[in-house]
Image 1 (tube, rainbow over the protein chains, first blue to last red):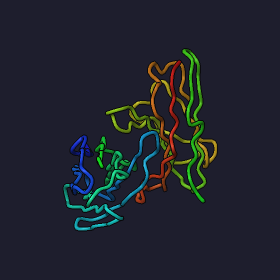
Image 2 (cartoon, rainbow over the protein chains, first blue to last red):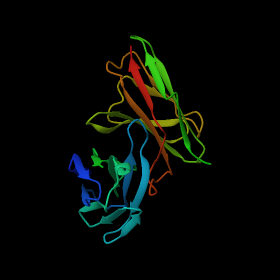
Image 3 (cartoon, each protein chain N blue to C red):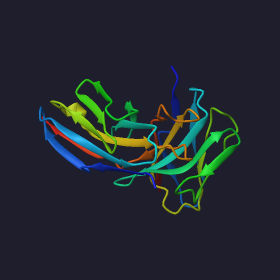
Length: 111
Length: 113
């Protein structure tokens, strides 16, 4: 069964303190891995898509990487406005054509 | 600009009442989805539709109903049979094969009063 596990559940950082969020997945035939950012009371906002192991993508202070078993979302020198829940999702190669979501990591960046 | 619109943003339901949440997209996406989000539980799939006039139950379909009469629209009805409807509801859409991921609406917060 396809599965996505995100860790940690919650992370508190000081402004400027770099860290990484983890997304581990078990899926047959990965067709894509997706990172979203969700602010309280709003819908998830697309950040990145990764399609193959070794791929990396960057956007401002965020960098997403992908291996055959997991993805990392690296946050460099975070600012308070980076505080949000970060969701990971995968699209597998089986018959199902739906994304499988993790439960998210709640990030709080304190000034 | 293309996007996906959910309305209303806030909705209050009395006990025993049915309510309908609207979801409209102008992205020309074939597939549409409804999720429920509760604190600490992540996204749970209620219903999804990959083509007009066809839809499938997700993981928590009991107490909900949907229709897909137009490609652009996928309304969700929360019926009186749903015993714990207070939650944040998200609608999403995608290409038939979602290799570009989903586009989400801004959500509807439903509260039972």
